Image (cartoon, helix red, strand yellow):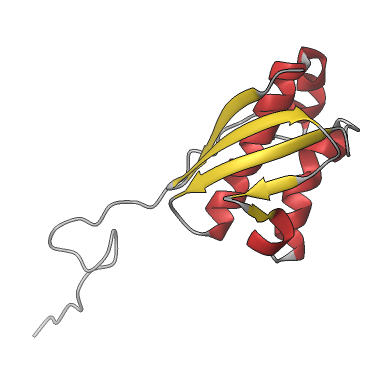
Amino acid sequence: MEIINSLGRRKASTARVHLSAGKGVITVNGKEAKEYFPLVIQQFKLAQPFKLTSTEGQFDVAVSVEGGGTTGQVDAVRLGIARALVKHNAELKPALKKEGLMTRDPRAVERKKFGKKKARKSFQFSKR
């Protein structure tokens, strides 16, 4: 099996995922996934596409992720893994789509407007 490349994005994060046949090793930016994403919920999100498609331990994943924080990065990696699995086997798509893993989350930080403190928060108003 050749290497399958895919892309995942979330907020300001972009993840390039390289999926190949292997023993289930996930490396993120040259580190082991458990070292890069230490929280249990983040590790669960990384393993979710493999658990839903029952392909745990069949693929090695090498990820290059940049931008944003850890939450955006882990969601970008999860989308990239899901897209790579669908490129490998199109029959896995309905299971992943049902759980919402094939959809790119469009929510991002709203820009700050002039005359305001933040995007929507105004300065304190004094009537008199």
